[in-house]
Amino acid sequence: MRRTFTIFALLTVLAGCGSATTPTAMPTNVPTVDVAQPGAAGLAGSSWNVLQINGQPIKGTQALPLTFELDGRASGHSGCNGYSGEANVAGEQLTIGPVMSTKMACAENELQQQETTLFQALEKVTSYTITGDKLSLLDASGTVVVELVQQA
Image (tube, rainbow, N blue to C red; front, side, top):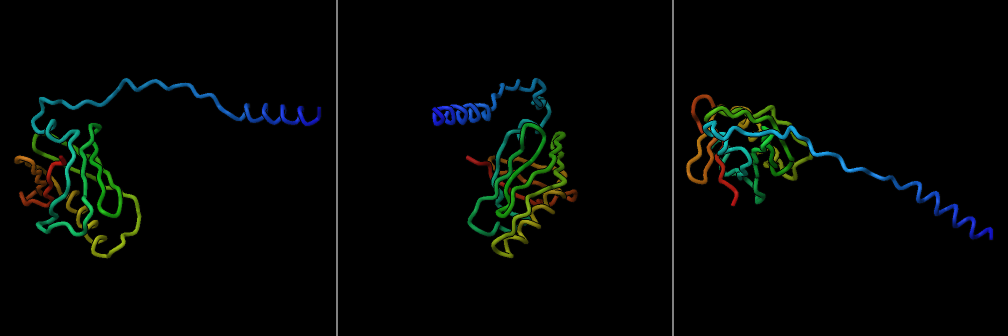
């Protein structure tokens, strides 16, 4: 009898520990992109891989993705850390930043330097061009600071 009571009490306590969750409503204020705005539809929701930074091919074997989210952010991976920043598009004008990232150490010093160079280049971007499957991010002087290829 005592054993049955102990088991019953234990099951009651365990059942009480479970928490019932109620589904939450989906937000109704989902961000939208004005597709009539030149260039906006070309970047919003698109994903790219970095080919070059300041004219130098990327180092390492890992792809460096960059995605322009529908919520107005750019996010990616530098080979060492994930990063994101605000992306403002107006026609062919583009600004990214400030860039914030996780703080994992890079396995190689060369990759750490590449990450620093990438973040600095992204924050210098003032405009962009898309030619075929290539995206060029340009600084104020019109110099390509980051070149990317669209992900398949």
